[in-house]
Length: 559
Image (cartoon, one colour):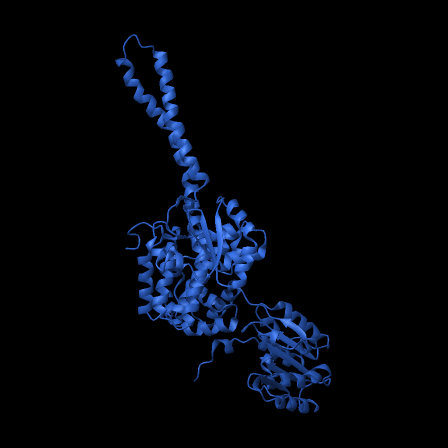
């Protein structure tokens, strides 16, 4: 005997059995109980949230011989006939395969006849947004003034594709996506009814993969119902476990490229889809970003309690700029995969950029590295100053004590003590003054330090453009300009001739922006060109590796 799929076996038969849509089922029950159902309804929402189930329950409830509080009895001949398909007064139409005008014309001709067995003819049109423009126009008049014995129920996952003229003639009900907690309770109930058990980790994974859809949750559960361990469930569903995804994020935070490469190699050997891995890793970093930018991540993230604990433990390893950089880097790699590049090579490049932001010339990478330096300085700033003040004076005084007995009798003790105090001040104070510049201004201006005959790319052009109040000019410099410098000479290069004219017209504003960024008296000129190769050569980033702030990692770091 053929097995019945779980999503069909546990399809709701009454409004009270519909999960998580009380705001809709209560209204429909009141209309049916009051004997005033509408002539046209539009059910919208993501897949698997109960649109078609509610439409079928509604078709039985309005025709039921013994309804109770707007619910169908499912026992009378009308309810049983609709359930087994023997009554032809309820029509289910798939608009995806019946898109033409002729299909709607057939409906218009059919509605003129009274129902055969039931009180109402009910037309359920699923995926109604797939109808052609002509079909919508043919349906329009029918929806506006249908016969009293006809009810239309339109269902769609994309209401924005339904013409406004159709929307205005229907009562619209929006079905909500269910959260993980609610879907988990539904799965537990189904497992209990089936007499099966599944570990909590696997149930949480199924609930998350369902993405708010009860039907998807039951379909996925059907695939893993007979499996025993979380590893088996993960392999069957073709996904990585949360622990591995968070391990990948942790490796990236620590700069552990070797472990990331090993992880990619294991996935490749196990035939894991690299695109799916990047999608799941994107979701992990999104959750990290939310947890770091809100005080109550549990209200903004639909995740299990176990994962929430895991998220709170790993979030301190990241800064917000790095998390933004990671999300954009993964997104670029994901786009590259969709264009047909080598999946393994592109994923390994992504892992390298995540663990070594110094290799990226993107602005986000620079911000991430600066934020990491600032964080390290803030954590270490207080301790060295306290050590200098508390310990070194004691050492200085102790070093003087053995010398006192050696001194001659003519030497005055008081004079020696005063000299010692002055000497201590000379030792301590300069060291404290040397610490302050490192704490207050951690970013070095490397362009200022270079004064020679060699042209170099100006890495801080984005930073300089911030000082320009003219938004159009600021965006032009930030997004379309490149610059090189040599001493106090600066050449700004743009590709479009009109942009060259605009920059020359506003040269005084640009010069003021340089001065505001602590670069006064610059000799600035504007040139037209596609890149800076004319000045710095094609291999600038590698030939000038020591002076380029984007490549200041330590020798041997990538080995």
